[in-house]
Length: 239
Ligand SMILES: Nc1ncnc2c1ncn2[C@@H]1O[C@H](COP(=O)(O)OP(=O)(O)OP(=O)(O)O)[C@@H](O)[C@H]1O
Image 1 (cartoon, rainbow, N blue to C red):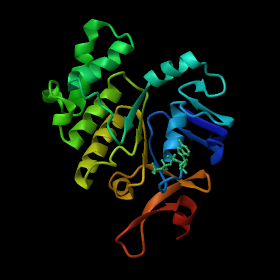
Image 2: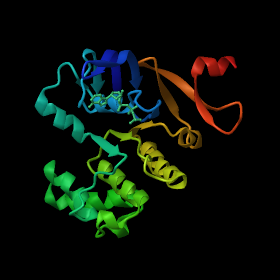
Image 3: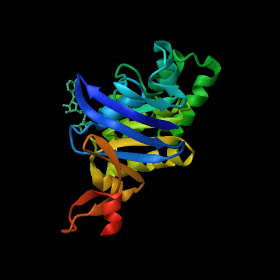
């Protein structure tokens, strides 16, 4: 479970969020949407405690930002799979070793590594690519490897920051399908994105950044019907 309680988030003393109060239940798929610079990355970073609230707290999987000790942040992060827009795969290792690396540094028993890596690769349909070097794969395939890497440690939640930012629209939808499949297993998925088209294709709970806070919203067509905009829930009901 994720809970923000009266939380203020700053970046270098610049206020980004004020008085955040919301929860995400286990197993939810939630989009965080907002224009460039509104604070999507900041919010996602606070989930893995790279940024801590300057006031109030965020509680993630039982760890409070107010109480967590430095050593426990690594423990929390092991239960979170993190997916970035720019993949961040190790280019000097093949796909298998990129995943195995995560398990080795977290002290997984040697005898379990192969099975866990191959199971995660199967989840994203890439078991045949285990021996490939990441740079020989397409962008969409690399992002699927990143998703497998995020899954390999049996996370309670996947946190994805613009996971489709470098991909074409069709591949983006495919990536979302993999994330939805993972979510169907009960793993929470939190996605920061400004790709409203993607949200429209795979609708789910959507939180929009507005006035340094988050409002529940629905992705609705603009009057022209050609562009899609987030509409705050109350306004959507009224119209
Ligand atoms: N290292 C930094 N130093 C100073 N300001 C920063 C830094 N990182 C982010 N910011 C500022 O904090 C605000 C929120 O940034 P953030 O990256 O969270 O937004 P975002 O919604 O994820 O943007 P984008 O969609 O462009 O990635 C922005 O105004 C940004 O300029």
